[in-house]
Image: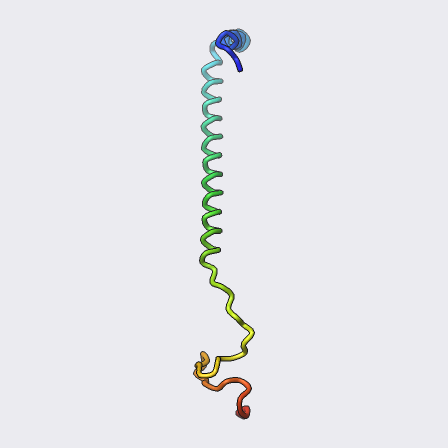
Length: 94
């Protein structure tokens, strides 16, 4: 991209235009900006990875859908209320 001579010429031009007193301040600000950019990129990557892991975990933990087409307990099973009758067999109690 750039050779050493081109970089040296650019540095000399920058020193002449900006002055030697402002260069340390500019370098310091550029370093701060680079650190902030790096930390934000790392935070975004961590947040993205965490969201993907949570989504994968939720998919694994979701129980399969149960068959809800039945209206009552199977013959011989007890209902949650303790009623052992099956629906549709026999007269309806009053």
